[in-house]
Image (tube, rainbow, N blue to C red):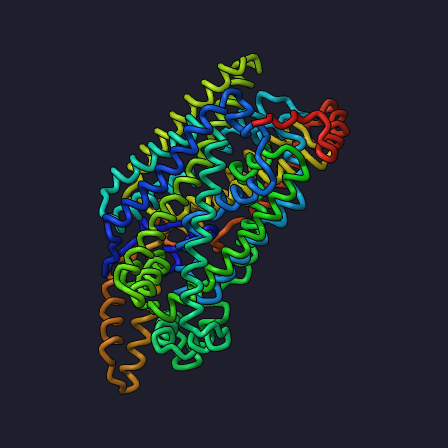
Length: 613
């Protein structure tokens, strides 16, 4: 059904390409642009300061290893809490209640895997990139080449979705043209990375995390105030809200279920409105928990701290920040359902992504109209800073894979001086950023919601298996790494392309048919349809006529793979491919070097010391 295709199966990013506007929300241009300029000014000052310190490859890729655990924790949180988290998840909660909250839990639990499995070993065993970890005891050239392709693929999927979201958000809220918004974000992103490297990117992410937490906390306090800071009363308001009851009734009607009144309100606080398939929930959880530990821009963060202890500390701090943030998004989502209503949210954006922004403007306006404009402008600026921070991290990860892994270690065979390495990194960052702008502009009218599903699928099915096996299994070797990366990536992408993530017009038609049948049963029973039901019947007939017989971009009428996330199948396949590849082509050198990497990952012996900045 159409509502299922408006959300991501893994990230619920800023799915703004799916907007179908029936109403408008406009930020005060003067206030918003002023706040934008303040944020840009502060971050550019950070870049100028960082540029003076960025002289070596270690400076550019890892901030010289001189970021503290606390700073890195805030930066990881800033890197991870995307506009998807801020707008997408709270929007999902406002429309689907409990099921949206489950996504918040998934994001938080993901960092337990990072803490327990990869944070300390990766920091001790690597240098700048994922390729450094995987090539330590394998044949470096083929491994680095294949690894770089995987990193660039994941980064491109995620980057494109963020860039399209940025363009749509700015066009919607401030009135900037889509192209202008994309170019503006792209230029700033390139400037941060090219001139400031990891140091600038880190501080931009820290600033963004602080702004995001401040904004979420402020609006959550107002939501709590409206409920008298009474959690029992807050959830009673949800159950007894007639708008929520009506919204749930209509959603269930599409599945042939008739329910109304308080029972419908209670259903909003129970699972199953969106995540209907338990197997799909398990698959999604696997992708979230394991995919995060395989995301290249997250793994890069552990090379920026001076010790393994700092790496562990940074993950713990990030978990507390992220956990607190997702508690706040839950309040924001339910608050939007109560005060804005699901109908009010969908009137502006059927995907729900504007729920938090509408809520902020409305609660501020209850104090004074100008306060509503200030709140909205502030949150728009926070969303803007969020996108800048995330895309900067992605560009840095992709450029590091190309410059460090491909150019320096494959083409130059590791023989490049510091000046040449930094120049290669900056040129590559410029090219990657420029390509991001071009792709973002080209994808304006495309549904890019499935791209984040692709990113997490590849990270969990291709990257994570080979990282874990390289660090902890003696028999892992070159063939295992290449097989795991290639098979995991190909299978995960293939399954996503034939999954319910894609748009299937026939599914929309089938959903419309159920509504038609439910309404016709009412008529056959002698009931007279009210105005709302009559409109629903008329719209269902139109949807059925427009979509019946249609196919997806691959020519399919229905998904071949039934789950929205392939993790439950693609992750085991990724592990099996890596294991079978390693067993089929044994490599004596890789086995002999296992003891060295085992000692390094547990002690940090052989790691470069942090550079004193």
